[in-house]
Amino acid sequence: MANQFERTELIIGKDGIKKLQNSKVVVFGIGGVGSFVVEALVRAGVENLILVDKDEVDLTNINRQIIATHDTIGKPKVEMAKQRALSINPNVKIKTYQEFFMPDSEDVFDNTANYVIDCVDTITAKIEIIARAKKLNIPVISSMGTGNKLDPTKFEITDVSKTSVCPLAKVMRKELKQRDIKNVKVLYSKEEPIKHEGKVTGSISFVPSVAGLIIAGEVIKDIIGA
Image 1 (tube, rainbow, N blue to C red):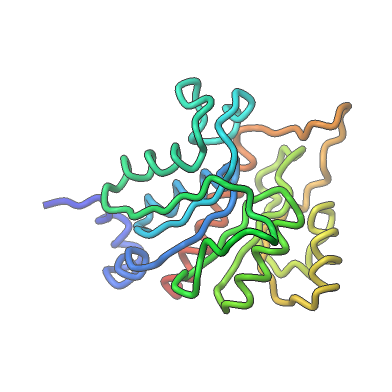
Image 2 (cartoon, rainbow, N blue to C red; image 1 turned 90 degrees about the vertical axis):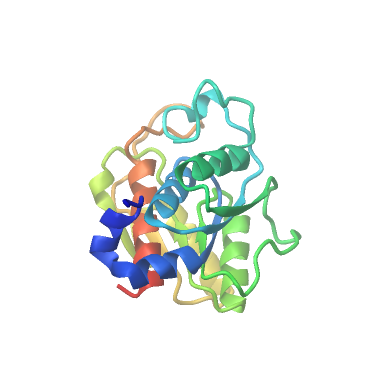
């Protein structure tokens, strides 16, 4: 009898599938990047997730977020991601927190997590997520800026200290250095941001999605030891 992971098993083996099924991953930010992270993790076989995001789906999210459609406008992103994940794999166990994660927030993950993924926009929150993961000795990866970008081939995963070009990465380098937080894995783009009038950040369908898939791939490879 066929199972939904038989094609994946050909690539990573039964042990790889078991490792993913037994792993717990925390995803902060279920937006353009984070929604595709969740999608790829669940489709690969991860069965324990913690999702954190305060926002509800907005009309302007439809251009880049896999959970955003005209049918989901006004609904919590974490709940839409949970419903979608369960429709992909009914065995998935998901805790959701509809909240902004900040330094005064209560812990939403503990040392039972195998990986922490930061896909939020706020620098204060990003620093706190990384700091707490480091304190618990949990692997963490942080997404740098994907807005105002048009070339999805310019993404790279590296240590934050080796980043360039990205304005968000520049601020993160400085803030993490001040806190003596080292060895932080990030995804960033080497593409110069596109300049345009107005304060709203521009986005397009195929850039944040690619970033999310790359991050998910990195996390999956780390979990299975590939």
